[in-house]
Amino acid sequence: PMALPWPLALAQEQHLFFHPLLLLLGGGGGLGPPPPPNSSFFQSKLPRALLFCRLPVIGRCTRRCECYDFFDHQIPYMEAWRWQKAMVEARVTALREGNDPSDVLAILQHPPVYTMGTRSSQNFLLFDPRNSAYDLYRTERGGEVTFHGPGQLVMYPILNLRYYRMDLHWYLRSLEEVVIRALEASCAIEASRVEGLTGVWVGDKKVAAIGVRVSRWITYHGLALNVTTDLTPFKNIIPCGLSDRQVGSVINVLKAQNMLRVESPSTPLESGLDREMASQDSLACDVDPDVLVGLLHHSLLREFSVVFGVDFLPPRVAFTQSSALANSIG
Image (cartoon, one colour):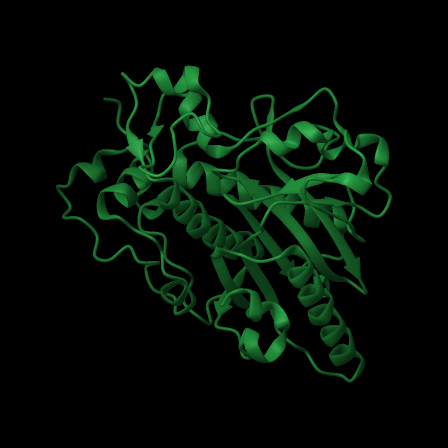
């Protein structure tokens, strides 16, 4: 069978799940010691640095960022939304008082939910909003309607752009760059931008959506990357208002490239997957969907650190003390 992209192969072979605590402490993200120099892993054309992605050593960069890492938890959208607004309000207040609070990044998943932007049109909803299959929220972010659900990694950066660039276009392009770099580093996927549009694309499919809000140069909302997401709910909307564009996911991109076959003992193969592609397994390798999500989560954090030049710190205040968000984690 065809070999997996080798960072993914390493994760699959060692059953890695990238414990959040290891990431926050700047360790190897659960990767453990590297294989010996003569290992077949080192025969890849990818740089060795992409294999053993470690978060930056504290103090190397100029800006510090508290990381709330709940990538393997499904946080209700309303809880995450309230938390973001509370974080922004606290930072705006601190700046007025002459203080300089650290930046914040949350990475998580959501239960199924539709969200709309400030100026989103209901014409892009292919259902009656009063009878939606999932919760539907109109938010203050930019962009049109989109879907969030399990298997989708969502990043909510709360950054003071005064320390970066006070330029919204630069910020959007930087978020795109995080995703593009993460896909290349973790899965050897060549992603790109589309002129005049916001988001990240692989071929003609949009795999990452971006919608942000800036208040007094403090950012919130963010990006969503479809990793193993069931794309079926996207059929009930015109995602991002683009009727002539398709939505994709990392797992389907890899399948289309005959790089892997996904099987779960508790879920039929055809559930949420393309049966025709799944049948083309002569050149495919098996991979655990949770490993793929963990790998992309780790890579997104690392590339965010590189692109924005931040060092990740554990949160100074636990979720239980800062927001009701923790109550949904159990």
